Image: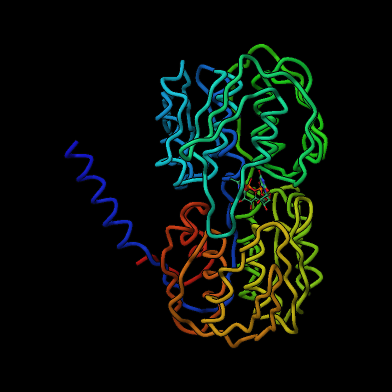
Length: 433
Ligand code: EPZ
């Protein structure tokens, strides 16, 4: 016990002491960089292992804080997780607990994705309500309505959601709002329900497709994934399988914008350009030359680019997870860009920090007016508030003159694998401190 306290203290000290990223504005980035596996595909897929006892094997799982948190939660339920070289293995046996504690869920909201699989496999799940975060209230009401549509009894008390069922029954459920997590949670639950489930107004994100593909490898019967109507025919049992996690489209898009904003030439490999059509269209509209192959994207040096408007929305429209990064690019564009955030109610936390670097941005409710100030950003200490905001500040730091110190960089580590190494390999002056 004493050893744990000592280890925690060391982790806390190291974490806090290495809590900054120092970026020095410099010249164009040049070279080739590989995208990692997708965090937002890996998380639901790792939770889906709860549907099938035995050993699941995964490739291309990114080494991120959120993956560590997921492993911790799976272990708390009685699973074993391990790295074997580049393979990530999850061994599921009869669970010792059906409870996901507040302490674990508060670290990562996506932990709530363990509810659907546990409910379907074991008929019971007790999961702490995830609560909100910096970018919004992040409700789970549609997850719960979806479980009820499959016959689950849901009660909420003392900050926990209790779900129980003798056996889930297939049903039809219309999501009144497109929700990625809600679609994932209810789709996982429906794989072991009795009968047919039809999910309408389902999310169409590529991560949903990757999850469905893994569920099908486990023996699930799913069709329509990637469209707004997903049909699941319940089966009696699922079996562990193997899977390679899809490439992270948000990281790939972030790396492409790093090349664009520095007037460089950057090729991102191991990515899926067809997942980023909305971003590529907007970059071309702004004046960038973008070339793609089946698994690479290249941005070419561009001296000046025009401000363009974007509106975030569910896939295949402009991803909310690239809004902050694109705003950094527009902060040094020629002209004025209007950025509308329709997915989350509070996803402009990066605006005040970008303004500390000299950006000229006026945030309104869900809309920000960005008046480009090309070549005028200057380095300063700034504060990361959430995962994608921290990426936005790093991108701005690449072109701000002087030194930008991004504080609370632990936000970045939740979703980007060795970003400073990847950017340094392209010529960026960036280091942890
Ligand atoms: C997923 O979050 C992603 N996270 C988010 O990425 C991403 O921004 C988001 O989808 C949208 O694409 C993971 O996949 C782990 P939602 P999720 O449910 O599932 C409302 C990142 O940076 N809603 O699609 O939580 C909700 O308030 C993260 O990697 C309800 O009203 O998002 C929001 O306005 C940030 N009721 C909208 O739907 C519900 O029950 C979209 O949320 C559920 C959601």
